[in-house]
Amino acid sequence: MRRVVRATVVATVLLAAVGCAPAGSDEAAPAAAAPAAAPPPVNLAGVWTRDGRTTTPGELPLNKRGLALREAIDESLAPMYDCVPATVPHILGDPYNFSFEQQPDRLIQRFEKDAVTRTIWLEGHGHRQATASDYGVQGYSMGRWEGNTLVVESSKFTFDPGGLEDKPPMVPSSTSKRVTERYTRAGDTLTVEAVMEDKLMMTEPVTFSFQFKPTPDPIADWPECDPEQSRAPLQYLPVNQLKYGIR
Amino acid sequence: MRTLILLVTAVFTAPVLAHHAEAPFYDMNRNVSIKGVVTKWQFRNPHPFLFVEVADEKGVKREWTIEFVGAVRLAKVGWSAKTFTPGEVVTVSGHPSRAPGTYGISSASVARADGKIIPGSGRGGNSPELLRGAVPPESRGRGQSNP
Image (tube, rainbow over all chains, first blue to last red; front, side, top):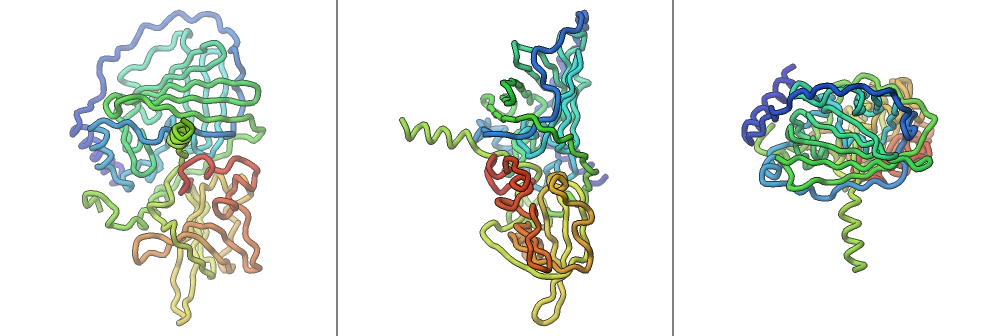
């Protein structure tokens, strides 16, 4: 509990410091009429495993706020050490599988990594747009088909000390983080292009791309994450590498 | 132009890492090897730990902690809570922990008492992914991966 409080305090202080309070202008949009369910243009159902090349942005185009926060965030503050799950787009690059379950009005995406499950609400089925009450670690995801490509737009991410870069030097994401994923299947190759933006932290969006292929393996069970075990490696961080006397 | 293309490719193919990175905690420029007796095996997420008691030449015993890649990745190649038994002798090689006075190792390989290296017990050529014939994480990222 003490760590949770500490993390919350740190996040609050950093948010206050940069004045990036959550946008409050989002209002719940009236639900659209739900048309008859049509079959999806492409079958994405099943388990997918990493295949081929991954490309990620080299240096993030951080603005002054992003640069300042990158300097302020230390490895020991990473939420992952309290077993907080990874988020898109980075979770797509981890060496774990994910699955899609396709329902008429939504897709359920399950990641082996951190046992993350998220719902992608398909447009045109009466689902509401994201509201200010939808902030969460994984954000809120809406999807649509553009031809044979599934386009997923996620927003409403909570402040995350490793939300733009979760490896050292970590870069936090603000509540303005948005990720647009485009899933395109060609035969047995699933290409995912993910554009990440955060107008409070970066001067322009950055793009990731990943490739996957089908696998007959089921999604592996993810035993409960042990926070004590997760934090254990932090004892190996040399004190002189820590910033601002955090330790 | 060719040079420019190569530079651009290099910039945009930086690797992706998973869970925590290895380099902040372990000295990637050094390697150590220990031989000792297993005292505890914690096959838990996010990273399993093996505790090994090692006696120096004066007989002084010290416990080392060995960290592995993610438990799910290891489970896919047959690892479990029964992979190690307290009392068995193992030889461990890997990168030592950075902080002075600590005795941690990021595992590159673990061998049984008979000298046989346990498949999947490290990274690179000994990673669970290579064992499975899957794409190794090291090929996807900046290296130093310890997911």
